[in-house]
Image (tube, rainbow, N blue to C red; front, top):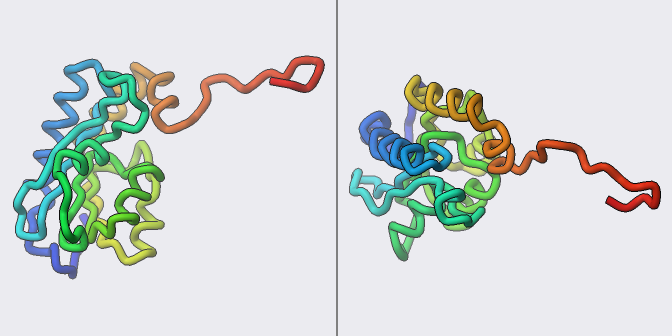
Length: 169
């Protein structure tokens, strides 16, 4: 685990991660992609929690982080909030974190996907990687069982585009 020296250092990353992990488990039980997230205030107050619901809602924009963000409702200032997610945020969710100035991100695991975590850290967002074995196992198992769904979620095509003789796809 990374050592933190930021305004969020008094928070227990594992306790916060438990909320996101429960959301990931719910998503998996619903037949979805097991990525959960939660948005907290710097004092540890839960503002909103959510999970990847791309499959459940047939909506490619419902990632765990966006679901938690929406559940939190409008906030006057996001700089003193922390996004907790079971998996490193993708570029879409990293953009949300950047756009609204969320001050910190706690990541359950980044072995199966690293997304925009380095970009966020370079921009001054406090990034903590927990490397939680539960999160790693859940994603590893899901990816092995559902590679096409996983590739769709991260924007990777399963098969190359085959061009016709006329040069058009």
